[in-house]
Length: 71
Image (cartoon, rainbow, N blue to C red; front, side, top):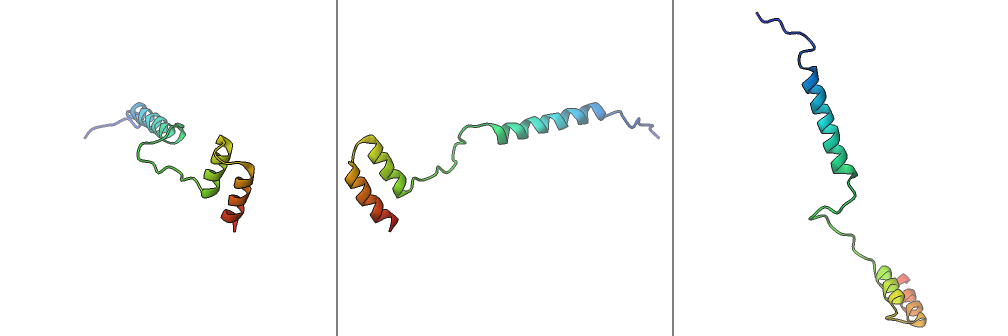
C-alpha cells in the first residue's frame, strides 16, 4: 500500500488554478473584436445623424427626415 502525502500535488493544482484564472481573464477582459462576432447594426436615426454630420444633407432635410423616422 502506498503512502501519499496530502500536500504532494498542491503545487501543480495551484499552477492550474492560476492558469485558468489567466485564461478566463484574457477571454473576458481583452477589449478587441472577436472574429465572427455580430456587429451592431446602425438604426435609421444613427445613419441619418451620420449623414448630417458628414454634410450630405442640410439641417432642414435632417429635421424633416427625423420626424418621418420618429413617427
